[in-house]
Image 1 (cartoon, rainbow over the protein chains, first blue to last red):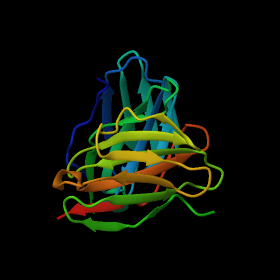
Image 2: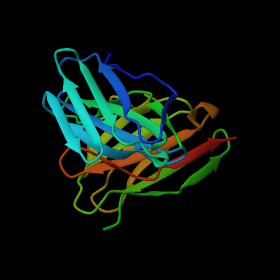
Image 3: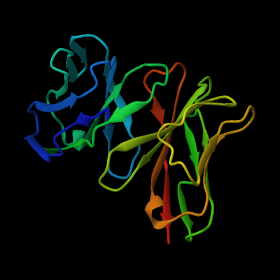
Image 4: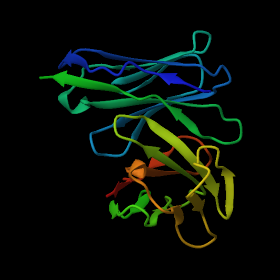
Length: 112
Length: 112
């Protein structure tokens, strides 16, 4: 049974601070890792993906992957109230199916 | 370039009726995925299709649920004899190559 675990939150950070979102996964065969943002009542929106160990930066977002520890994280620098949403971690084994296993998400609240 | 189009946005069905959910992938995308999101739950994979083929239906309930992606027209997720437990948001996603998905806006199914 593939599992993706996230703290449900809510995680509250003040505006301008760094928000750190964490995710662990159980399947060592996982190859691709995605972070989605979902506003209440809306569909998930892809923020970042990462395939290799290390850091990947895109604007205010940095994804970090450690396959040995089966851990992936998302850092949001200079957090804005508009970043308030639920962040979903998703893992793909890539074994021909391309299905994603999602965590339940972490609710982030950025306080002005 | 239109995104993934789903309709209807909201669907109300009485117990025992059939629900048909439609999804048109982004132009150039040949991979279609259906996910279900129950209240306070994460997104759960249901089925992965390419044109005229079901590639992976490991997440589909064994009864009452079916999916197709015909040569012409949208992908259809069909739920027969709906029950209250089928009430959820159903999201379709598409990708050109099995990588990061783009999700549609979803269909909110309510069974009364």
